[in-house]
Image (spheres, one colour):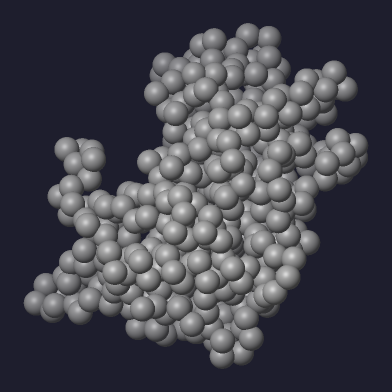
Length: 526
């Protein structure tokens, strides 16, 4: 259940996590004690912030440092790994009143999702107009979670061999194709074990939540102010369940369904179903702009144009790089963010008119990004597979997804291939933690969601609200962008600022009208 890099609010991607339950004693009791030990060490040491490694490419307001966390919280004084942290100090400048000095409220820690996405450069978002009020009051803090980027990076294959394209993307795959993909999934799982060794089992969402508490302590904060998007909402919810007394304020933007029965196999089925609806939304928008794109004046005609392009790419990949799978990947990204709709539709239109350059630029693999992409994929797979039991029989996957693909062909099988290594995973599986807080255990938290979000379907936000007592849900109606906080909707941002700056929340549920649809952009000439 991979999310694309989060575009609107500041970060990225999608699902996963869980908690380990020891055979005896309270769930995670040993690890909880280890977290307290690690947090005490981190508070005493702090973070020595200084120039970022790539400082020449960055504004001077951002600084970087590291914090050490245990690889295994059952042994807090054992092997340590370092997480890379970025910070931009509070500006104290009121963007609406230059004479007013804004008091600092502490650190606002952000996670963009994934698993496998880095929030290291989140502090730079304070330069955007929508974020200046928050940047005036908070030190904006982002970090690369364990396994990601420079934070003890994981790898499952040689990055030189990660990008495989051009490739096919059958919506109703043959038995021989399925057999080939099963073999690839088994090989990938073996590669993760071979390249990562014994440390592989410790890359979990539960440990991400524990790392967050150590980071809180290292920043010198008694209580955490946190904002998580997509997958970040899941281990943020784990944090709220495990450390409710350490919470000051929390924002959950585009919430993962935390029901233990959903983690992760069923969440992926639900995601595939939801993307069919979002794909229909995109096609309907293209049809309304047929005068610009010429792809058809109904959603069904647009689908035929897309299928025509896919069939043509199967015969002759564009630029030798873009086949049907790469086309599907580009359109899947547009399913996350409607800001992508104009240029994605333009690329398809131009391609069908004999001008492939835009499509190759958008959908073709970028060799220079192979290391980052392989690392992100490795972390995503490790966390999801470690977090929960998965069906281990191919027949179960085949049965469930064959049924689903009859009504939701757009994303179903590609989602299967993304997650299938979990059927053959070599590391121990955990049982999901029951995310839940009672009245008064946790300060009121803010949940935000778009009603037609496909990456994290809206039912997840409703379920999270049911499980976190006193939480409030703000809904962007009739919209489907993944990640709405700090985006283009002023109503949504008003609720966000009121909560983080003043601690004010609406009643249990509030709604905003959708943000404006994107404007059509004509295809280029090349």
